[in-house]
Length: 207
Image (tube, rainbow, N blue to C red; front, side, top):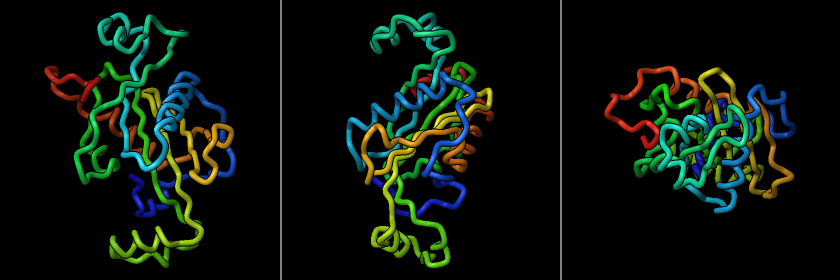
């Protein structure tokens, strides 16, 4: 469901009015846009989702059974990435908090997250109550609130890409995409790729 709490200034969309720089990693951009289109099919008020991004060629070679289940015969092009959705979040936990405890193994080339948020216009930070319940009510009742779905992806090489869809403009033509639209979330995702990997007996691609 949509988290009504307004995000911190550096966690929300940097500028949803126009896309920024072209993707430095087209494979990542393709994966992020595929995730966005897939999630959009299920409508709004969805829980947060987390994906591992794995090299498609390596997935086919090393996990042929999983590739078969996903109906993947081979990479569409060199360097393509396949998103693998992870288990849902524990009840009551916020994705941003969960990311602090995640570390991907070397077999994961990148990761992506999907969250829905209420975003308030600039200049209202001082008016937001400190009490979480009051802040939630404030956000839900603000006349200029915007419901937005954010899809953010990163790779070990440092590339990033985002796709944003406003509920008020819920069509493919209105999806805004760029490299640094959600800087706070991107930073958290990058940190999960540069931490201590899980134990060898853990299956990272289904963590």
